[in-house]
Length: 241
Image 1 (cartoon, rainbow, N blue to C red):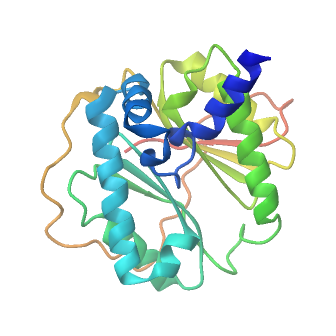
Image 2 (cartoon, rainbow, N blue to C red; image 1 turned 90 degrees about the vertical axis):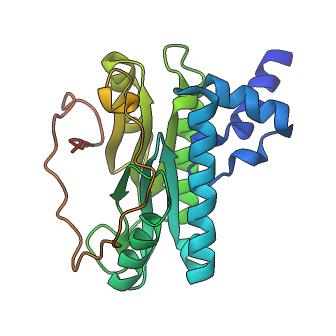
């Protein structure tokens, strides 16, 4: 009984699996450091990602406290994934603009929807939470997956994956787990491979001179590759720029 209880406790404590959970909620500084050293990139990368997350939350809080509630945030190796549904297009622009003000941000992946757009209806918050919990559990108990390297966000039945995969077979396992969770409509992967040379390139220190303010959201990229049609939910492997 000890091992299952320990693993269930670990599941609730692992911060990297939830983009909205601060790293500091792990049980004590020692536990936080232990978790961070196991992540791809080690303690320095984890600490930098935590700092970036904190700075973004601070800027959002100062701009509009409701933004923190509506926009999901995941940070991996300086790459920032934004999800959620906001009332107005201006809110989406503001969320992205504020992220770019934070030093150390390499890339901003904007998956924020505006209320009323296609894909923002159907599903419920409770269902989304259930999907994310089920998927995190599957990743944690799969000994061929380094679950600590992945974050999961679910919005209206769409699962967004973020993180660093050890290799292509591991990423395929992660995606297949996501596709086979009931009630999942689509899987969008923003996961990088560990072999990607950009992970060894330092992030630009200064923030951009001018905040980007796109007038309209970019069109969704075409899927890179589909997994076998026998699976339940379609997958969008987003090409990295």
